[in-house]
Length: 286
Ligand SMILES: [Zn+2]
Image 1: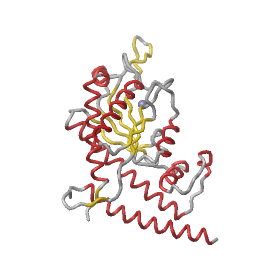
Image 2: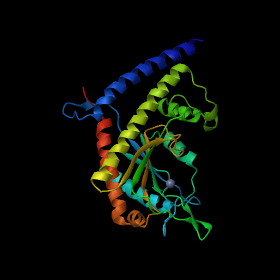
Image 3: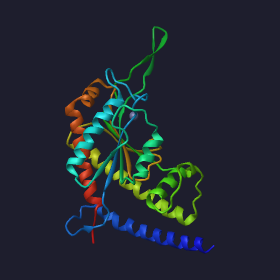
Image 4: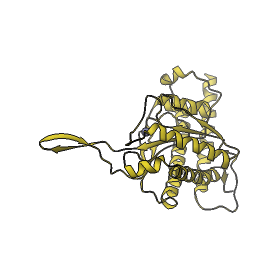
């Protein structure tokens, strides 16, 4: 079929272009600053996702719940980003205490063609079992400490492939219900893999930038940047990070996470990391 051949040809060209942009994008992450020019890419839309909400409370501390902490930080982060980056549009997955399916969060980000997705969470350790007087009891483990970043390790999910395609190729409109049945031809798959790899690299890079701010500026402990299957991020089609902002079931960290000072420190560190990231992705060496 002629159309099919043309389509394959166009995708081939796009794949070449992406490979080229991969090469040129490699340099912004080095320190060469002086003679740079714009890539034309603009970080226009950031989605901030306050983890959990409504009936899903998330992790519990002694007196606070994860869903409330993540919302408080998310609202502060929106304000800080709007103040710092006048040209960036901030979208929130929720601004109140509502129950929201994880799938819907990704759909919202994909449909708004967001360039970045930041999901905020609090960590906690599960109870440990101990034998006391011959009986096995469940004892809280309050020893967790520090921040942690999660990046989704991409699998071969058809939904995700569909989501990436949807974001990058606006002309291909597909209904949400058809996502799971999408078949991808080899040329298209090659292009999507290039996007996916770029998003993964950018996600890891942003996470490292913010992680360094948490450690160097705020003196936080850190468990680092980990890549694994993350359901909350699995269907987003843009660079996406999940930040575990601290352990809510550690009394010291619970106080920090609930304090104005702690929340402001967390937000400021995220914004500093974002500033570096934004400058890097919006420029390229000649
Ligand atoms: Zn969570």
